[in-house]
Image (cartoon, rainbow, N blue to C red):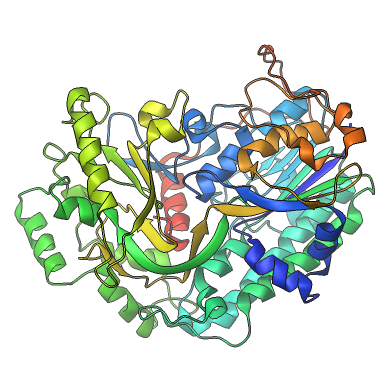
Length: 558
């Protein structure tokens, strides 16, 4: 079979890559662009890391795999759990390859903790807790720590505006360490598919985008010399150079991103809107009334957080990360614990624009019947379409969907009833607290946010040169399997991107013009070349949840 290497640059965008390549600043990405095919890669809706990378791994839409965002509501409660690998029941891309005898190496992809058995090796990614099992096979962790050190599961948390240079140095160290681990594995173990993920490109764009567009953010003032985003991209490009030099010449190389990136100017607090419009109701007890009074007076996390920065409560020398400071402040303010679910008809959790009805029979204290749901969805949709930013008068919602328009599959009943994408420059926050007392406020904790158009670059023997259009993230699993000259299995929802392949090589894939075949029986995974071991247990309960929540808060995702 053909060897394929995939490098995931989280949040990478051509708006950064193209000018840097033209200026000769990204020589390795530039060579891949010149020698191969490239084009925008449409992400999932929502274009959020958990949903997007899970779609890449499984080849199915969120309505089938169930990862609509970072948090999943537990059945029978309103408790929200961070997503984990054990919640995703579909076979992964590497499972399909392993069943056909392919050896895989998966390094650092999100939503891979706890580690699952593969025909090869796997290093867990983003939400891996300290001290937890983080490799398959388990003994691989000790080998890596002895030879190259600990794998950086996530980038350094944002320490606030007074320590930007130290933070950037940490991002660069993380890139270098990811590359060292990957090089060790490439040199020591056989593989047919190798995947490596870099998170640092996403992190730096969240905090530093204002230095690219030069537009002041009144509530976010972070200054630093130079171009931090370009610095991080160049560090990744250098790492890619070392990694590409280690690959066999016949390897087909894919560089991809899970979503794109652009400016952030405004926060839209959807639960504040639902509260203001009467769809979400609060308890009547004295504690809740006191917290509501504080909210109305403007004593909010959004107002107090900048003082945490000014008083140097963040960063090196302090004991608080960004997420911990938010959590500390949040204990004194309104949260989902104050919601009266017996009177609430709609609520939100997520980062793009998801609204759930409090459905009878689905939510534990649901009050909306199936008969009432249709009219309520129409009412909410009309309200969202009319929503304007009071600061500039513009309509906010650009695209709005019912869940059936986007998703299908066994997880559809758990999907949000409405999903909307705001205009460029807005982040929709459906947090489980109420950080502001206004629906729309100037962004205060970052200056960049996700966009739908990511990056696809494909280069190697038998691949075309030039721009391709219409590629989607969900198309990559069948495309990678096809590129390896393996049978594309039934059940994958995307299509092999045959336009990436030269005409004389298109017949080499096992699918021809790509057909869906009858589902094949589920054979056991081939035994890995590394020592075998028992299957992993579920994530370590409450302790893992708290660690995962802390990481997500530090990233600004919950």
